[in-house]
Image (cartoon, rainbow, N blue to C red; front, side):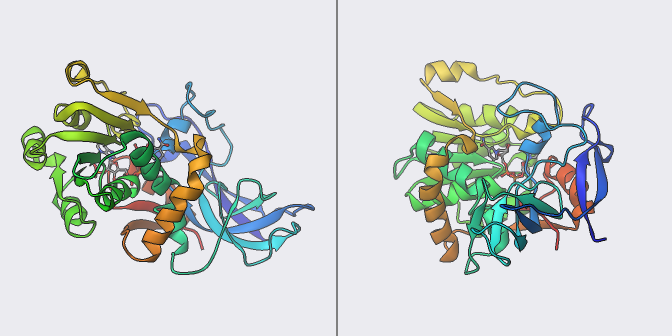
Length: 331
Ligand code: NDP
């Protein structure tokens, strides 16, 4: 009997997430019923939100159940079909979780074509992370040409797209990233105007030098000291897209120290969850797909090899060990 591998949540983290929180299991390849398809996943996407789902707390989504396959985005190929809308060989993006295979009735799947866009990019710049960047930038930050925007975790899946889209719209794009290698990449490869290395020890002074005209809009991915430093540079009526607070996911929640600037600079901030705005996805994915296909939108990937490597890669993502979109190659 042929089998496939999957990873389930074994226990909830106490403090930092650890490999013991996950369990690798093997199961028989399921038989499919009428209306269903069987998909072999080629890539699994590892994303920061998974850390929040591991906890049993009130949030925008229900917590991950103990013993259930870890939630996760995948891109793969239909290997068996009893659904007239899908043929064997079709490539599909979906949420099949941390698993080599999955069964679906087609609901919530997106069919993608072979072409100039690599399959893996549908989990990155032309997928959920890219849409996150697109939504936060166009719908919340609404920057005008000539304005300065700042984005944290700038070399990552979301941040890298934010800065490039902002440059396309005529803005000054300033990134914040950890270490000289990531910062050099953000400026030299992605084309940001500047990038501040928050690990260099001069965050406030370096950010001031990189934003001589102040900051008109922030795309916040990290929280904590980085966010406070950005808020301190804001111009009157600045806009903040609160996308993520990764520095607080795997430890103590983040505090905001710089509330006074919200008053004195009359700032507005809006949190958002990209999956709640499906009406924008066709428009956003169209723009992102064209930019990636033409080579104008650049991206980078960190690819772990094989499902068993997923827990370690995920733990690394929460510590900034990834350089670009974190994926797991499954087959
Ligand atoms: P990335 O590819 O950017 O990877 C995470 C990066 O975060 C790391 O590479 C690291 O970059 C940085 N990081 C990790 N830990 C810390 C820390 N303790 N302090 C400071 N920086 C840290 O991930 P994504 O682009 O996928 O996600 C970026 C953010 O966007 C996350 O906060 C995520 O939750 C959020 N998000 C929100 C969505 C929404 O709908 N609201 C949807 C998708 C993502 P460095 O080495 O530069 O520090």
